[in-house]
Length: 399
Image 1 (cartoon, rainbow, N blue to C red):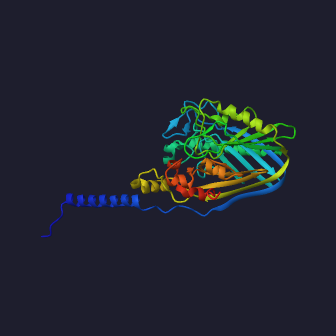
Image 2: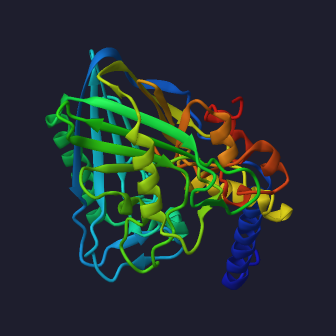
């Protein structure tokens, strides 16, 4: 007779084989790097011209539900109410045959691929840590600080973005530009980790020939984390505005926090007015804008992650985060801006001069640290996703 195996033994053997296979896969995941999902960089849009300046601006409130999802800190949070307004602000510019758009959004970050306007545009977040979240369809990113994905809030922000762009373009008219910049070490920005911060304050104002202010843009590197965590708030970027739209753009603020016990917004607003008071007015200028796709290198967990877990952590990042983003180069007369899809540290901003880095624009690839600090686990390296090669991939390292 041929012995018939007992069902219990067969099932046990199958479970044992499955367990061995799972253990082998887990071991491989902890040892073998996943291939990077990078793609070649390509030009998406460009606009070049020179001539008489025309400008228009708009400010549109983001219509949120009563208890909106917040972004800025780990976990899932909702605000007690949506009473405090948050906005999208936009400036449309024309010179000769060129048109460009500059946009700031009262939110933590712009998720990869969230909004791709027609034409040439630099779209950036103010980086408030108490703004509307849920914009990123990524549960891991949501838990890490972007807010639980929320379709209603995504739709609300998209509507506000399109309305602001449409209104700014519709308002185009003759304008003149004032621009001034200074190193401002006595300002409220302070380092929160090793390395130099970028203390520069950049201010740009557009006026009608009659003198009426169209809009103001301010670039300053400092984390907006001064508001209570359980409220909806634009934080200090919202405190600079008293009339016409004021667009606040983050500079290279990856390692920059704020000085406690100081009136942050009013202090910056006063200095902006002082800077612009004697700035010359330009009525004709060159306007150049280029938008390109960029791709991060392979994911690389921080040196602070224990060695035995580092490859697994890198592979998890590779699976969870989109490595693609966009970069916008925008030259408005004497001012040259470079959008960075992440949070560059101050040293990279200083090295980029005279070009001004605008962080949190065109997607999000995490913090961008210098190679030297990353390799020894210093500075903001613990918050990076794509290792020491990211600065080079974004065209920052060689600067």
